[in-house]
Amino acid sequence: MVFAVILISLLWIFQTVLLETFYKHVKTRALIDTADVITESLYNADMTDKDALHSIVGKTAVKNDISVKVIDSSSSSANAVFNPVFSVIAQHDNVLSMLRDSELYFIYRDATENGGEWMQHYQRGSYVMFSVPSNGTEMHKDEKDRTEFSPRTSFKHGAPPFFKKGITQELLYAKIVTRTDGKEYMLLFDSVITPIGPTVKTLRMVLIFQSVIILFIAYFSANALANAIAKPITDITGSAKQLAAGNYDVTFDGKGYHEISQLADTLNFATKELRRSDSMKRELISNTSHDLRTPLTMIIGYAEVMRDLPGENTPENVQVIIDEATRLTTLVNDMLDLSKLQSENASLEITEFNITKLSEDIIERISKLTEKDGFKFTFNRSKNAFVKADEAKITQVIYNFISNAVNYSGESRDITVVQSVSSGKVRLEFTDRGIGIPKDQLPSIWDRYYKIDNTHKRSHIGSGIGLSIVKTILEMHKAKYGVISSPSSGSTFWFELDVTDTVDMIE
Image 1 (spheres, rainbow, N blue to C red):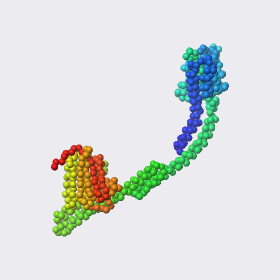
Image 2: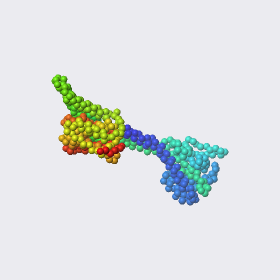
Image 3: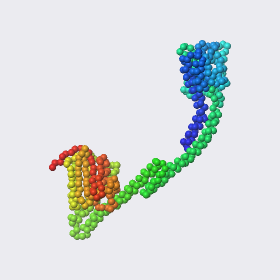
Image 4: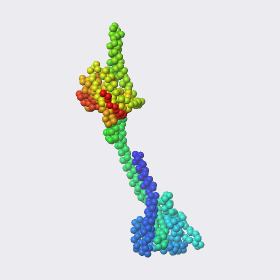
């Protein structure tokens, strides 16, 4: 509505208030431009050939509704007779046919003093009367009904002065021309400025109807747009408040404009992810509670047995308590590590180290922990590879990949680690022959709360949230990583780091 009001206001200003000013400017500019064209045409023309002169000047003058009079001013003086060469009269009763020789002289004098140009506005029928007193030294002019000014200077600095509105005006313009043959001529141009009061009144009536129609259309368009845009946004806002309150079953309806539909789709996707994240978080809490409860129960149970029953204070029972306490510590540490890695305070301590030797040490350590369960580890490598990375965090990566292979190896219990060096990269692959991962779940296995199935399974080692730790560490190193897997065919997890040096293995 504001936009419509601004448009209407501009229409009123330009088509009524400023219309007459623009019209007078246009007429004055057209007179000067036409005079320039005619002057250029007459500069080398044969001034004795009246027919040729009419042919040259007539069309341009009549086309622009301008009267033209060419006067021989070679021997001009206060008492001289100015001989007209020829004239083209576009309108009758104009001032060109009424000017006397004395008046022509003063026009010529003023034009000469003004650089060869002179212009005068006056009310039609009240043309300037010049008179010469007996002593011939002074000119008396009636200043009431005329305004004299320099045409080009006036246009440069603003509008020329005009007479009262609603009165027909004439514009008299004089120009001195010296031809190539040395003869001097004064060209007089006259243009009528017709009052446009009736036109302005007509435009005002038209604008009134236009304004009413525009405001009417703007009002109903504004209402329609408000309903089309505001209602979906209001509905989305209501749904967003439900989502903020924890209702993850809410849906966002964004029918209408494309941008609102995109917003609704984005919010629906966010709701789906929040619902999924909340579900996995609840599952993690349930599983973590189970993982915490189990070792605590074992510790309390064995401690009570050792306290209450004579002879139960054996090294075996003490070892059970130590193992369960260690598993409990590992779970808590992994959860703290994940939280720290995903915070903004996490940083890397880059050093150069032998990743091949590091992998060997981790495999050997885990092999000793799991040999009683029948696990067999194979490490294939041909070179010692050196990398620049955070050694402690890469240790976590390798440890968690192997722990994941142990936990999901199934009945096979064979785990293979392969190191290869190519194109300035060292690649480590960890392969198990276990249950595998469905293809549609592969993108989700790195999520913080993800678990392959909903049936909690006690891990042989580790906390069960290792892949999320791996993802965070490798992304901090800007390293590539991935998984290749299918159900019942096992899984191969891998990652790559830039290699700084390699040394052949010594057999």
